[in-house]
Length: 379
Image 1 (cartoon, rainbow, N blue to C red):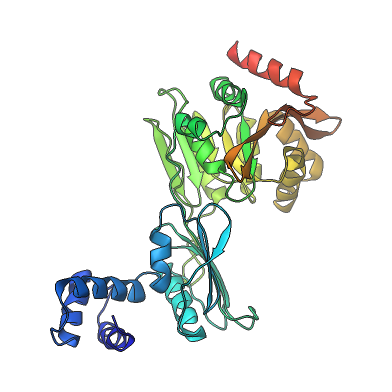
Image 2 (image 1 turned 60 degrees about the vertical axis):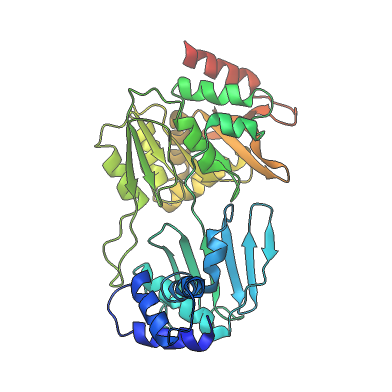
């Protein structure tokens, strides 16, 4: 559809309340084109108009592509996409900087947030679950920057992951033993390493008689389990009120009789409530955490806990009593796989994570501890 026709349709639709329906757009397209478009052209025109006015504009086709995890806009002629093999520059272009800004502002409004000179950045979830981050100039020196993270539900089973090479050596058996033994653990790794996908698959191994309560920013975990309760956070509205945080969810989850308490991603003050919960009879709890290596997990927990008001020794003491293991994932050119399984143990007043199993066959000083841990769980 020509830009002139889009402009005419847009001018008509802005006078209508609510999100435009495809039927309404189709009627306007036929009317504005003077009936000169055939059925196929009308369908394409409606798709273009809806993407422009209610979707993500020229980015919408990229977001629809299977396997796309991120769409990044650095400028009108710089659109990048990650299809699972790293960032690739696309041929998608915006007419100008104003078009990028208009899209960012409209997407922010769809998420119930404001984006303007007084509030030059936004971080929010769109109604379809896509994560939006945008920054306006002059904070962004190169023009409006737009980042869209596609949150696809983690629906792969353990067998699917095994077929993709995610469990080298005996790692698959080790993880199944962790779940069966009701050991509390964290799944760690970098962005896009498959933490949520693995955690979802492992939760499918939990006995059907147990109740799972999931606390997430966005509904990504979809374990194959008959008794799942899902809680999701909520951002503040344009007046800055009504926010529901992960910490709020963890506190509510404790009153919902969870057999297994799950936090989709531990990244803030909720770490204190999770560690407390795992120290008060809630065995088998788990979650994900961004970390470069298992050995860095104690420092990461310490940073989050201290920021939430706990002192350093309290964080380490809570972690030592609450957590048993760390499952670390790595994203490689051949796919995502389990790289290491670490054991959490005390070292004086602090805790450390010792390697109990490694995919590369390297030194594993924690191997005896891991064997004892899993043996006790089976017993």
